[in-house]
Image: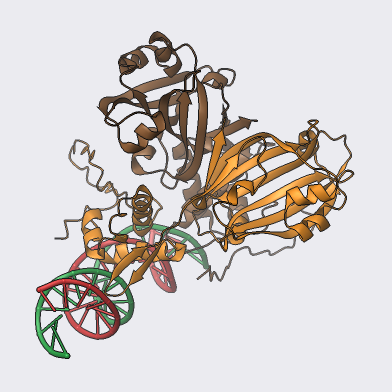
Length: 269
Length: 269
DNA sequence: GAAAATTTGTCCGTATGTATT
DNA sequence: AAATACATACGGACAAATTTT
């Protein structure tokens, strides 16, 4: 086996004859070398994608390393590096003599609708939900926040930094702003109740609705990777939402970053 | 094994106490090495992110290479590699003696609401929108599609593969399924009108609504990178939507992958 | 139960790419 | 431009654990 490896690098000395753009339309191995992304990481990405597609669902395990190496046209060691990375991510678990088992992990579905409270729809998916307050601050509102909450400047807001976990794994981190005049005890109430809904209720707001949501996806920065236990290159789904009471007065402006590989947003319209 | 980086980094020979601290809220620079992504690509990613955040909006250009090298704690050669990559992507344009200019590119906002057709909300953001049919097929519905479209098995569906571009840059690629019995000429109509809405209209469906949408973010695969002109490591926002006529009968099941760095989804509830 | 086949884990070495000095 | 250090990728050989024969 072990096909001839293509000569890497751009030979700038000798002009290579007109190789007519080999059309590699078959999906099996357009591996791109030396483009700033290590081969083992590219292989890891492709294995991860295949797992997500359900390619290996019938066996529940990866093909043997030697087979994968053959499929991708790389050395077995390179496949091993890729599998090591996926192991680090908690996606697979290699067992000597047995094979590499695929750990099943479902995506949590987060409903986004007018009446949805943060964790309401999660109750039937997992019981073990925890929200932890990691920081809070009473501060002057900057223009962006004042505009969203429809506050006059200057105004004070309360900021809460929250990390939420389901089944022991962190799934999201939020930064939420509340008008300080109306909800002066937000931090204490949240710390005690571990819920924005209940914190609102303790301060006299029985119900509230979601006004609008913006959604963006990007790479997680170092802080988010740390809070959400993500590996480098991981993705966050960032939602920016404005919630209001039933009269339409904004009560919360929140930016939530979800670990993209653990969640799915769902919108009923 | 987190970065055991020894960090020769920033040699501050003379302490610059009065430096105005350019709003660099991103604390320090925990550059993580030996993790499968070349340093220059990590730097490129971070510069791209900063551009997206608007960090350099005041000047419209990147700080000098030497300054960037100092900020990130890497050699200037590495920063140059990163900038070369961003130049290739068309994000910046270095000019000798002048600096590195940032090419303006806004995020397109895609509204997701009950009555929104695909490109309706785009009209006021850019004039130059194009939808191109790259493949079509009449095929037997698989279980997932039949369930979404509420078809009995066996049934036939028409599949359209579409790439949409705005202002000359591809922003999304969709795979859409329609019941073949009801819309037999979908492919021709779409090819002619370049619009799902108009193709529906030509076949007797004047109006339709969005029933539900699922949203997921993940790394782009090789095919998506090719169709959307994305670089390795890029992210796609994938929406899976079911549209129905006004009686609630499903008429379209579509999976759309957006280039995540070019779009923002917006939900009004 | 024992032997063979399969599969992951570890070691050797070599060549090349990456980043700094 | 060159020297140095380290990460990446390849190739081979064998050990260790598990399943199959």
